[in-house]
Length: 366
Image (cartoon, rainbow, N blue to C red; front, side, top):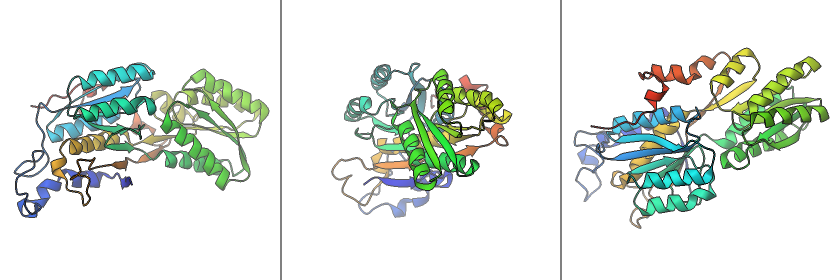
């Protein structure tokens, strides 16, 4: 049974200080040596030649950048090296190929957001068999041997979007979803949105569920055609930040006919934030990406150093996955008033980097 953990910053800090706080007198009976992942003075510490990699699809997408910033900060604390990578294209086979290329570098661990869950089951299993710790984040491959999954709660994201939009609509009218069916976490968000509306708002009907496949023009066309059939359309939910741009553009044009269509998605980038501040986007849901990377790195390091933990079960003795956890990294609803906190270039400089490219650079521990 997978355990659901609340991903709070305090919990992360407690994890980092676990060995240091416990001290030598608290080591289990018969185990008095310092674990290899810890230092005598306390705290977790790896080695400079210990490499952890991040692998994503469409590596130029802004969503990943704060995730890597969190991973990089955690790697610095742990004294290990890390690098950002993956594939520049939205192509499952090319991401799988890049994952195998990462395996060839013999890293201690890989944190990966799989483009398709089925496509990554065998590659992740092969990595684990090779002795590489694997954590999935944002999207999952649940049938693989990955040790943990770090994500914002996709059901919660869809439910919160549904509640926020439907309340703003006054509890009546029509809504629609724009879907990216090839990505499991996107499907979960859309399904949760629909389920929440159907269960809680009897006077609101979900009139369209359109596969726009992260295409701006498809989002525009879907809203335009749906509005012609359902002029009471009052809300659009999208699990990603591309199709919704077209949808919001259509909604803005339809205002001239008296339409009031509230568009909401799960993502942030400069375009979306600008539309939000201009009043052309109703709301954005931001998974707490930095925490996603921070917690993924901590979890991957722990799996690579199983000597650090002693769970009260038989898994360690049997050589099984000692973690087997799903971690919720949290989420935030972004408003026009808070939008300025989410610009990636400003965020990079706030962390002390010259720019985003500097933030995405590899970290080589010394």
